[in-house]
Image (tube, rainbow, N blue to C red; front, top):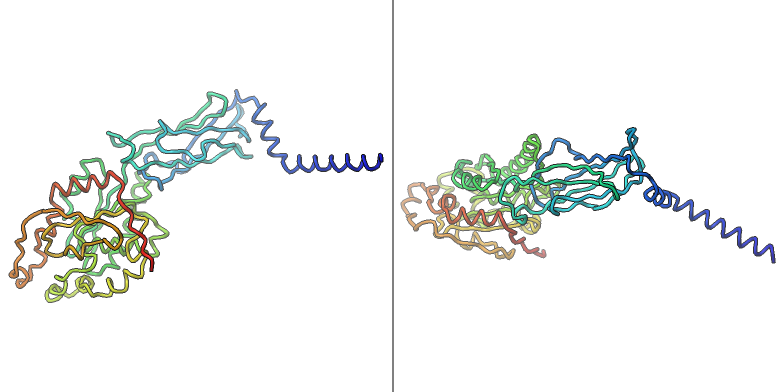
Length: 380
């Protein structure tokens, strides 16, 4: 009888010791957090990327921070509970609570909201992210500025970045940073897409050199520039970069332009051939890229000028993906047969007029300042 009882006690002791061994760190952490004298501790919060002082405010542009707890002698102290928060709950810090590891450090992520959802009247908007030792008033703060997502313009066939001068000036006056891609538009859509990819990567580095962390850009694209943006954003290369937040299309021939066939009489380059409606670009290439050529992870706006000489309503349509086309009257239809016969097919005032119209300008700013629809996913 005694042997059986002793065996049970022995087994119980072994089980208790085993549980203590397995959960030793948790038990140690509990007693350390509860009974350690925290009054002589200090906490230091810092950005992992110390050169950053501003971030473009959109939810994928995460900021990483490190908190270190030290005692009066500078020793890093493990197992201390730390609370994190941001000014007025602007954005979120994940996790909101953390325990310092064996090196006395803990790491968190700040996730900003879309800038236009924050209701700010000033740009940039300063915020504080703070870390405090639980149960004490001991804290540390990092200051950041939130700024809007930068804008990148992409011009069309045989145009230059100057075509956006008026629109860029208007949008810049609203507090946005604007830049333009300059590329040889005669070398084809694929070439333009590669140039766009490289340009966005370089722009990220340029902003970082200025202390501004940028994850994604809003693209405003005109005519063939829209096809360049689609080609890049629907490519496999885009999946690793993931650097576009919105694309606002302005008079883009998503199915090609009938004028391109006439243009072949006057221009002999790759791009004019690709803009013909039955070209391989529209028949095979786009249909076999991500979501048939319109990435469903990117917000989309689609604008067209009425009486556009280059792009028909049908060609501009993105109805296939559930995206509405907004049509603006930017001028009368003054394009004549003589313009075609004289080879002046690039002199299309309504096609370019969308880039110089106040109603369009104001609508674009509205689009930048609100959520736009995502393309519907097309099942192949």
